[in-house]
Amino acid sequence: ASGAAAISTTEPAGAASLRELTDGSVVMVMNDPFDRSWRKVGLAIEGSGLAVEDRDRDKGIYFLRPVKLERSWWDRMKFWKADPAKKNYRVNVKDGGTACEVSVTDQDGANSSVTKQMIETIYKNINK
Image (cartoon, rainbow, N blue to C red):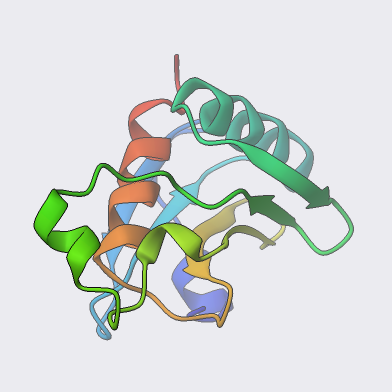
């Protein structure tokens, strides 16, 4: 998402922090090596109620099932609009050596208010 320079952190070992990037997207920086970050993110995803469809540890990607959102009857009538619940999302864990950057994107690699909520939810569950 943002490059290795953004992965540097002054947080104590094992700590995580949220950072907003210049493009408006939000990433979580974890002051842990990849192995520990990968495991913690996986547990946080489970704890947040998001469903993992698949994972590719070599690439650092968790593939999430489409999110089921409650929609009003009026929203269901707007059949011409794209349904956000039909999108797949990815949690990306980028290895930066002693720290990792975690981001959430949709299937097209884009950020949105939904991906921002997802990374915030994962962050809230990271140390549980």
